[in-house]
Amino acid sequence: MLNTFQQERHAMLPETTHDESSRQEFVKSFKQYVQNKMLPNLHPAYSAQVAEFEKEHNRLPKDRREIRSIMVNDPAFRTYASANRVSQELQWESVLTSIERQLPELNAKAKELSAASGAELLIDPDFETPRYITSLDIHCMPGGYAGEVCEDDVSTGALYDRGVYLYAMGYMGPHNDDLGRSVGNYIKRNLAGFTPTKILDMGCTVGHSTLPFKEAFPEAEVTGIDVAAPQLRYAHARAQAMGAEVSFQQRDAAHTGYEDNSFDLIVSHILLHETSGKAMPQIFKECHRILKPGGVMIHADLPPFDHSDLFSEFILDNETYYNNEPFWGPMRDMDQIQLAINAGFAADQVSFDQAPMAILEFAAAQEKGYEEEAVAAVADREFEAGEFAPGGGWEVLIAHKSNEAGGNS
Ligand SMILES: C[S@@+](CC[C@H](N)C(=O)[O-])C[C@H]1O[C@@H](n2cnc3c(N)ncnc32)[C@H](O)[C@@H]1O
Image (tube, rainbow, N blue to C red; front, side, top):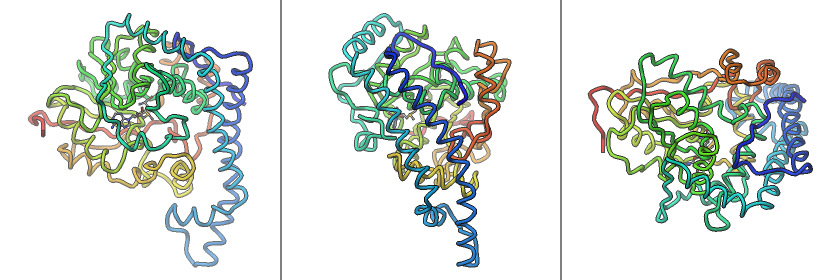
């Protein structure tokens, strides 16, 4: 398998024994095999099932649901879907053993690093975590985002940090930060003269995408918010370990408690599809309310279904059915442009665009010291259905708040 980026070590990343490392490397290769070999092999089965359907009904299948009904019993699909699910479970399990072995040390290290930070960590003891977070182990991650097994627990943060590296098979760069880095580059390239001084990253988890904004705009005050305390504790300690001064606060993106007109830039990365049909419109309204006039909101997530072909829609939607991601499919059916307009953004100020993956931008990648071979491995790769960055770019919804607008509270 291609050897892509290795995750760069930092003080909060759990240590691994030789056996734990081997298991994790196996999981990464297994995922690459499922994605790069088994998934493309579904095309002949798919074409045959569609031809059969057409013969029977005198028309082509009309949507992803009809495709699912004809594919769900296909042996090639069943083999692929089972292997994919197993790889997901192994991914978490291979990391969990290393965390369980050293949890007290990790929790203590997080406290020590946080205490040394000049930036705020706000954990709200009365915080009510939304039910869509607590009621299931999202993407089969044991404990979900907010699960805690002891006081000052950082375990699910550590699990996410390493697990996401394996999930992305190393394609998100050594710091798992390609999303934030790509959006930061997009802003610099497309919003000439826009220099935000207050930046908010919603649904920051362990800060993978938050830290690049501090690097892109060093003078700015950067804050990451999330509903999950263990993620925030880990994020704060990780930022300190990596030398970044960024605040992390426990707040709900739908009801942040910030004053009207507080931020120049609000971003989120793969947050929206993990919220709910009720929370998402409210998050857009909240963004409009707390953005300063002239401020910018950017949400990077998977493209809406009408931006892709039926096979990709069907494959993407497997996350809804087999990976504990109940809002994955429904979110893609929502009209996000209309939601932004309903939230107060002017219709001609809202659009979708693509932010090219930062790791594919060679000059920048080399400047960052990324190994040429790893960058080339990503560049040579064909992006397949079901991936986060089809065509090598991240989908972004971008909206500008008008200069005259005040808050809408
Ligand atoms: C897929 S993760 C986001 C990853 C992260 N943005 C990154 O780029 O690495 C989704 C995160 O959103 C958080 N979340 C979900 N609903 C939220 C809400 N209403 N407000 C704030 N955070 C939320 C979850 O706790 C989780 O940490």
